[in-house]
Length: 244
Length: 284
Image 1 (cartoon, rainbow over the protein chains, first blue to last red):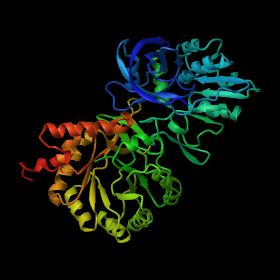
Image 2 (spheres, chains in turn brown, cyan):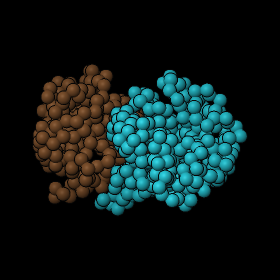
Image 3 (cartoon, rainbow over the protein chains, first blue to last red):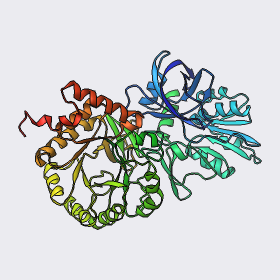
Image 4 (tube, each protein chain N blue to C red):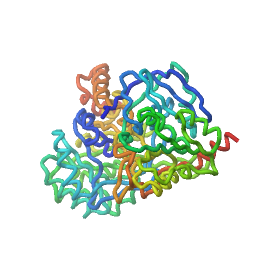
């Protein structure tokens, strides 16, 4: 497994893609890790770093997809080429990509972790669901992805024969995916301050035990957390309103 | 001496950082397992961090069977933080943990802001623990106490060997849109830079009240060697790092090096020579 490093890295580009922002940073000596792993990004003017899954890995740069839902994510979306930020990772457990019949399933900003998975796995079948057409512009990050917009749900695009599902998206979507594909590998999200098991902020209940999503996730196989993780309905709604 | 604040570092997931400390302070252990508080447990606040972890821990038995043996493999001084609902519970945990030679000291968490307050008074808890363990006992006190120096004197009188000052404050952060509390339990522990002057005052007052007779671990928002030196000047004999460990993996070594430099720049050959320096001119 790639060993995490904390480095100060320069922003090489910041590009809007629908409602989201693609933040590109110099890779330096950072390893990209596995699809589904994440990095903590320091946010100028903020105390807490924020976790972001690796969206794309190039030889010279790492790419993160950011949904501007609050002050910290807005700050990250406004970073300019040449500014530097602290980057720490790769962290956590990623997706297993050596599966026989993969299907990538993404919902909303959960699409962030899938372009790298598609890159590593040779563009397997992918289904993506979004609330709005502007959010859905991020689908262009994955060639040939099948896309739906609410009220149609991404789970309606999952074939009954789906076996090796890799999913990332809002909590209700992941529970619905689990109901259709009980062995799905699913990437979850919770607030965390450290990313390496120190703060116990990201603990969820899984299978009767507590797990820190940062070190025992964010990808969890088969069993969804029984305690609520964090799905920021308010922020998603605010984002949709901002678009309207 | 640079330590970590209890609950701010897991030596098993970050052994390299733990080894860069002079002693590792483990997360609070209680008699029974605790699953901790509901999500969300973390929120950023002005000048700091709000947490509501709720003393999540595997309980005494699993700590002794699964965690302590792995901590012992670090081959470094171990302090164990102990919590409980009443004096008897604290004492039961202290007694068992105190049986282990690998444990250098026990920190009594008398002040977690995220659990219901201990029914017994601080001195009663210390007395019960002292009766069953000969280990150094550090009483960790809350900055919310109206007269922290008075409580410090009472716990020392009850058998505490030293003081850990301070635990977090209490804070609340509301969601920007819904105006609802960001934490699942609404109010949580508030730590970070905002805690620095609060910790400094607590250390200052307790050092004065105890006339420097007991060791004091100062903690609260320390991010630099100068801030560590401030705590030492106020009366700390050791400094613990908290939320800075989340953001700076090299904080222990950096703060230690800065502390040496800052002390020398002020004419102190070693940092601890500055202990109590703040008391030489000011009347308490």
